Length: 487
Image (cartoon, rainbow, N blue to C red; front, side, top):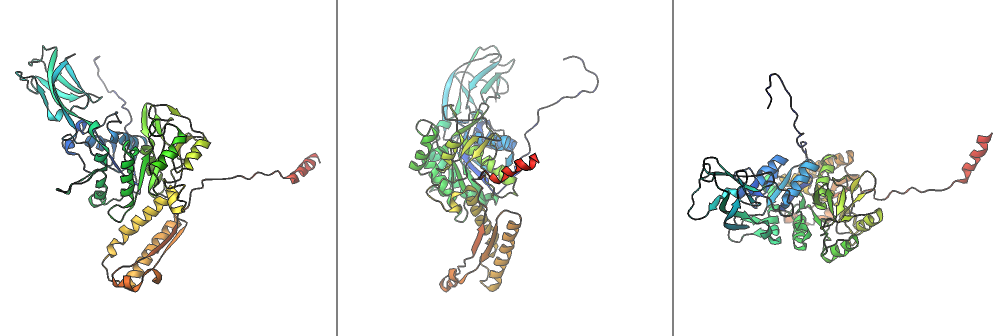
């Protein structure tokens, strides 16, 4: 470096934007993470533990990060949510267990080049390394261990140590094995002996733990498995016995799933991706060299849309910008969807992506229940989410009145407070209108004597303007303009 004397300046790359906070569609994502790469000292214990995450650095610290999203599916979501859509928070659940999903590799020869031996990917350095019998090397004296930027485990030779003159080193280690994870690890359950919850069963732990209601359930890659999607839908429909959410899933875009748009509806129907609390996506989307499941980006887009609209889910994500430059199938082949083919998918209850006007955008308003279910509250994503949101809010708001004396005062308190709430939502344009009533026809004496009260909430979220027509007609009356101009 040249000798310097004075004051100098230097520029550094712009850091990630601070995420916008939105809780109306809190994502709960289950998958696999490279926890062996995390900087948090407790990261290897971060297995089947819901973690509330607010920014990219926190996610990487707790879960590590890898570009190999096929093996480490949570990393796809972390990058999309924080780097591309800049929204928070989210709850991440890693099921990859280094005590269960692992392989012990016996000592083998690795060449030492420029003082370093590359041990490869997925090595759990926190578990240490072993050497061939008869050799003794001391960490910190003869060698040090670390990871490079690509996640490779590197054994670095220390000058003056016993490995200083070696050209190879015979070393063994423990490798984490993401390919040992199965759908049933993602699905999870409850241990009969310990009551410990795993996988998607942990969705029920989110509200008691964080006092935040899950809004969107996702699992990149794994949601293409019908057995996983079925559990996601079931959990979304009944969280803690009182809350509801939406599951966002993908149709596989390989030869066994649907590598052509025309195959997607049949696969959806055959595999029962038809729930009212289910948003079904096809195909994958690509940005540069990065390939995402459409469900991953759609969750980020819904969160961003909610944040732009008073943290409420009344606006549809359809026709809003995605972070992509092409649609692709599993093998990387580009998918060229025109308006007609994209609309065909929409008509079968599938959300896709369309490059029409304004760049690449999410395209589709319908839940997986469509076209079989045409109830307005069940077929439109935005309306369904509003029913979930208002229902969840009512449960949480009125919980303080549980076990109060059943009296006129209690009835008036509920009616007055929630009518004010509905009027406020209407005034802000979030709903068209709403009211709450306590009706004798829904509250028979037998139920009242048993401590059961029922309040009827009427409200109308606006449906998306899915079709806008301009009616064109030739009006001969304007021919008279020819003569007025001539005069």
